[in-house]
Image (cartoon, rainbow, N blue to C red; front, side, top):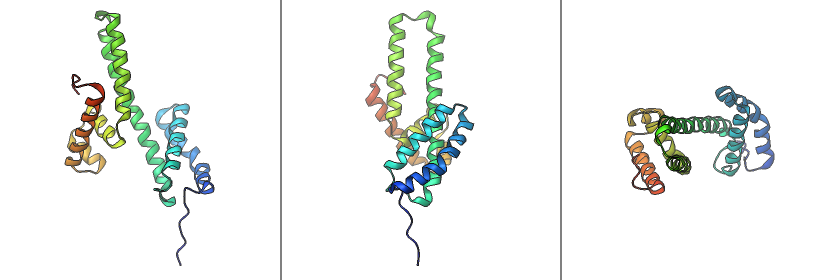
Length: 173
């Protein structure tokens, strides 16, 4: 007779997972980023997502989900920071030649870009950032994600369409 697996949707089971994994996962992320506050924020957000997705994640897969989601969230933040730093460098390189109005427009665009990228679905954002920030080819992205090149092309196409819709057609992505 096999025993039924506990449900994460039951508060006692969820709390058990939180107590067991919060500290080790926070340390895992802290060792990657070196910022305890950032690590705590990432892990807390992952546990919120876990609660929201409790019906779709089995108890036996929860540990894997928590570590993987935390790592992916951290990697998304790193990729986002690279985009921000790249735009800051561009702005600082041209700061002497630009009018204050133009600098304000750049800041507004940077905020719109951050918002637009964060509004993408996780799958599309991952492919977009790997392609545009990490300069990976579709084949390399397919190997990293375990998907086909065709699937990567579809996700990239969807990401670009969504970004164009949010940022305007005059933007070349």
